[in-house]
Length: 214
Length: 214
DNA sequence: CGCATGCACTTTGTATGCGATAGCTCGCGT
DNA sequence: ACGCGAGCTATCGCATACAAAGTGCATGCG
Image (cartoon, rainbow over all chains, first blue to last red; front, side, top):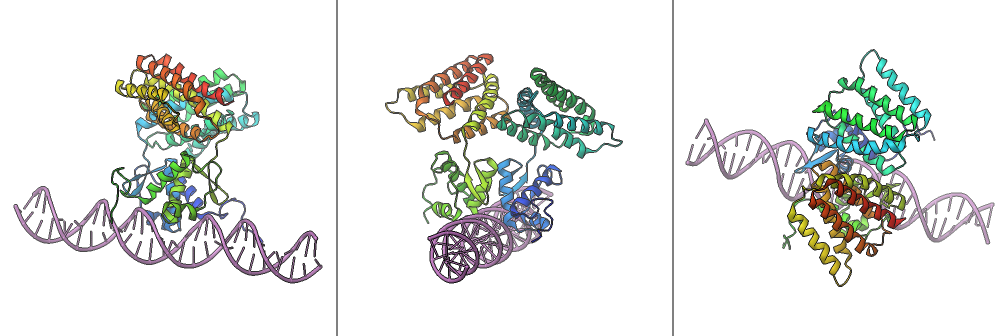
C-alpha cells in the first residue's frame, strides 16, 4: 500500500492544480517572479511540468487573492508601489494594534518562548539570513493575529501582511535590529497581559516601518 | 448573429469567463445560490450556457475572493455563520470608524446629497423594497470607504461588507428605519467635516447592527 | 434476512486542440 | 526618415474529450 512519502503531506495528495497554486505563490513571494512580470502560461506551465489548465486555474485563484492581476488578456504579477505599501501599513497599524490588545495574556506561554528564542538566535547569528528574518517576522505577527480571538481580524491582518511583503524595494537587512527590538517589546507586552501596552507597542512597530520607508 | 443589447457595456465585450464570474457573484449575493449549496459544475455551466472551463475558472477566482470554498473536491457556496458575522462587524466597527473619520469633509457634496435623497425616498416608499435598501446601504458605506483617501482601507471595508452580506439570517426589513436613521447621522457628520463625530456615528451604526443580531 | 461485493453512473481533474486576437515586424508610401 | 498598414506569429480563451475517483444501487452469497 505504501503511499511513498507521506511526509510532505500533500505533495501528491490530490490536486495538481493546488500544488501549482502553492508553487506559484512561493515563486511570487520569493520574488523569483517579481512585480510587473507578465506571465506566459505555456512557459510557466512547462516550467512546472503541468499543462496550461491547472496553471490557469491556479492563476485565477491567485487573481482572486490579489497576487496577480489581469492586464489586458495576460496575467501579470501584482506590483505593490510605495503608496500602497504605506497605506497597508497604516491599516495594519490600526488592525494589529487592536489584535495585539486582544491577544495580550491569551497567547500561550510556550509559543511566546519559542518566538523569543528565535529572535535571540537571529540577533546572534554570525551572518544575516533573510529567510530567518522573514520567518521570525511571521512568527511574531502570527502571535498577534492568531490569538486575538477574532479569526476574521486575523485573516485581514494576514492578507495585509501579504501585500506589504510584495513591496520589493524594502531593504530588509537594515531592519534586522529595529525589527528584533520592537518585536521583543511586543511579545513582552503580550506576555505581561497588558492590552493597552501591547496595542501601543504594535502600533509603534508599524510606525517605525512607515518612517523607515518614507 | 444579433449580439442583442450592447447597452450594459461589457455584456459580450470579451471574456466569457469574466461574465460567468459576475453572473455567479450575483447568484450568490442574491442568494439564488445560498450558503452551503454544493455546486455541480456541469449543471451550473449548462444553466449559464457555457462549458465547464470558464465556469471553473470563475469558481477558482471566487474561491480566491472567498465567495466559495472547496469542500473535498467540489465547490460549495461559502456559508457565513453568526460567529463570523459578528466578528466581521467588530472589524468593520474599527475600520469604518477610521474611514469615516478620514472621509469627513472630503466626500463631495453632490454625492452626499444624492445619497440623502435616496434614503428619504426609501423611507417614504409605500412598500418595502429590499433591493433599494441594499443599494442605499451600498451608497452610504461607499461614501465612507471611497473617499477616505486610503484605497487599501476602502478595499478591506468592501471585502468585509461582502462577508456580512453573505450572512443570510439577517432580517433586513426590520432594519429599514434604524439603518436609515443611522445612515443619515453618518452622512450628516461627514458633511459637517467633524471627523471625530463621523467616527462615532459609524461605530454606533456597527454596534447597532451587532446588537440587532445577538 | 443481512451484509459484502461489484458494477454502473455521476462528477471532478487534466490534457489537448482549435479558433481568435493582440502585438510585432517589416515593408510601403509619403 | 517617419508613420502607417498588412501579414505573421505567439499567446490566449474556450470547448471537448478522456481518465480517475467517489457513490449508490443491485445482486448474490452466507
